[in-house]
Length: 317
Image (cartoon, rainbow, N blue to C red; front, side, top):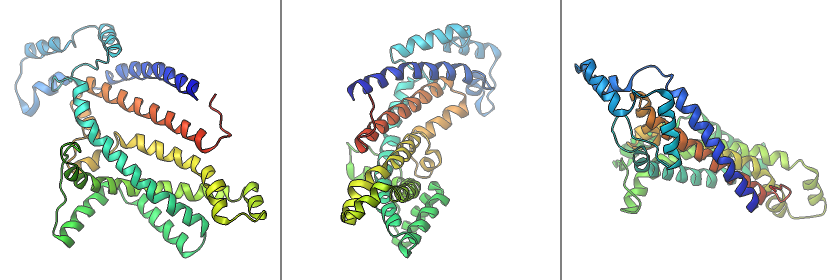
């Protein structure tokens, strides 16, 4: 297991290098000039000399190969450069907003897991009964309702029925845990419901498939209790595809909650990504893409380790 972890860590390096190279050159194909957008915003009149001076200050007048060399050297020092729009460090821009998206993703994942596993199991065990139909209706509803729209319904429902408006915004959990949870529980619920719907359907399908296997029939023929068959034999094997779905959804949530963050006024990674793209701030975009790449790599590594823990037949060596 240790050897597998070390090999995966070594594979991260060429993967990130490939992502960095691809993003650097592909972003510069994008139309538009960040300097022009920055200086001529709101119809401001700026001379061409001022624009050229700003390009020189930002280092955009250098040949592309020189910019690329400086960028790759900076990555070896964990220096992601400076935002072309704000002038602040890209690392600092991400550090301020990352805890928001990370906490919402973790809370939504916990909500989804606690909902999906019991409901998916009940739906498979009581197949084609009212329980199964009810769970399937809930799951399909979760897939059909966008999380941001559900978030707006939650806010309007709390205001209409309880005359109470949930706190909007973000407060660090280390400063005020109560205010933090009272603000983030609602976006986590709206996102976690859809998340749970995907995992519930996967759990049901995987468990139904496992329950048709020969070793399940053999265990039942030997007189093993149904609960024991489910817990020891069926659930662990059915969890493999569910773990994959949960891992991929978690990785997506880090930067994919753009509209939900807008609804709940959360200044997270998704909103930062949209702002950077709208402004053509390719230095910030590069840092965000690398962050998401690292996130997916780490999540996939954790999922692979969970595979080996759930199914001892899987060997990672």
